[in-house]
Length: 185
Figure 1 (cartoon, one colour):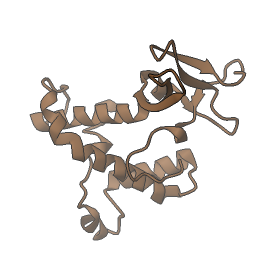
Figure 2 (cartoon, helix red, strand yellow):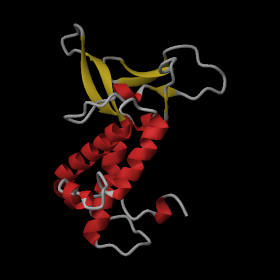
Figure 3 (tube, rainbow, N blue to C red):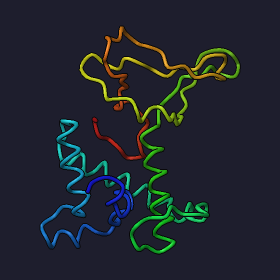
Figure 4 (cartoon, rainbow, N blue to C red):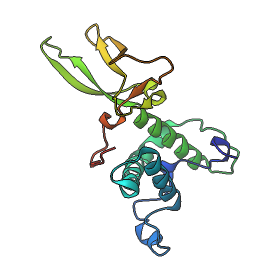
C-alpha cells in the first residue's frame, strides 16, 4: 500500500535536531526516511546542489516544525483518527505537521498596494490553490497571483500564453523561504 493509509506520521515529525551522531554510526547522513526523501526530491527536481541540498532543506523544515510544535499541539482539540496505534500527543503532532507542511507548500509573496497609495509592499501570504500548481519549466511560470481592488481581491492571472492542455505552473523557487534556507531550488 502507498499513500496516507500506510503512513504513520509526517516527514516533518521524523527525527530530531540531535540525530546526526546516532545515524552516523550506521553511515547515514540523517534519519533513513529523510535520506530517502532527499534522494527522491533530488531526482524529481534535478537540483544543482543534489541530494545534500535537498536533505538540508528537508532538515531545516523539520527543525522549523519542531520549534513550533509544542506551542501548536494544544490547538488540536480532536486529532485525526488513524489506523495505527498512537498516543493522543502523537496524533496531535501529526496533525500539526500536516498543517505546517501544507502551509509551507502554499506560501507565496504578494505585491500589495501601500496604505498611503504610493508604491507597493511585498508581503507573504498562504494561497490554498498554490499546492495544486505544477513547477514551471524553462519557459517560466504561466500564472501569477496578484492583488486587485487595493488588496481586497486576489486574482490568478496568466503571465504568458497558455497552450491547450498545458498545466498551470508557478515558480516555486521564488516562494518565501525559512530562515537560513540558502538552497537554489
